[in-house]
Length: 156
Image 1 (cartoon, rainbow, N blue to C red):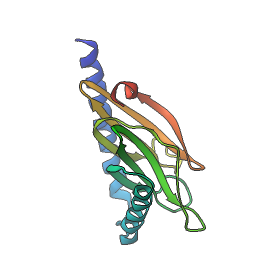
Image 2 (spheres, rainbow, N blue to C red):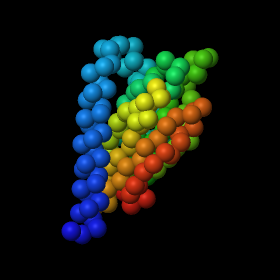
Image 3 (cartoon, rainbow, N blue to C red):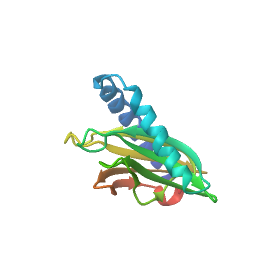
């Protein structure tokens, strides 16, 4: 079995495990509040104000313990793909993290609490041609912390 096939198998198993974990977690969540979607739209519009970008994917979740939802956004600008996390601060001003590289194709954003500490991690995954990659991140004080990943350099 070739190296690429092994990597794809590991990635597939990882996605299946993550999907199952997310399914269980979603069952525990209460129903989504309508104002959450309004917040997501406001944060996306703020990001779009600052430059000529194309939003690829955006998902919101409470990534820390403040009970306020953040929005993870994958976007394209001038042929490059990036992701940021946006959030409204206590003064209602919208802030964004530093941008990080995102996959070029098949982008996905998933949320889970891997270590069961009450803080949600997010997973960015995707591919570029035959290169598959993913990164697991956590948000700390509006800074994206890279916890673990594989293959992101080949798909971003």
